[in-house]
Image (cartoon, rainbow, N blue to C red):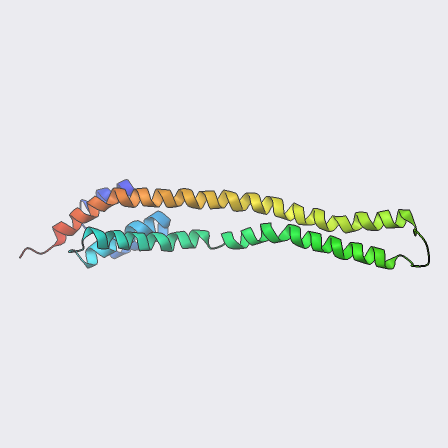
Length: 171
């Protein structure tokens, strides 16, 4: 995609329609389109200001990519705790249901109640383990995208600066 943008920059500023398509294509496209828009809006834009425009678009794109990661991380963290809470409540009910007058109660009934209460912990772990794995996987992918965005923006920066120079009116 960056190679296409660099080739297109040699021909001048793409049309607004082409910029919209580029921005809608991907997170990288949105960053590159933001750089092109900044240069076309302000041909005298210096390198620092252009970097800021690219970084701002990059932060926006990363925010979009990360929008559900916190929820997934919360599920991964909270699921075992909720399972444990269910187990503790179940255990409290089991021991409370044992008749105080009968010493020891029915061991089979007690064992069955404990096994049922432990299902809560198991279900919490069944939810938490895949959620944690997916959270780490997607967090790693976002970090990979971030690195690619930075590298590609750095690669296109000199071409955008040259485009701005060609668009500047001669004094």
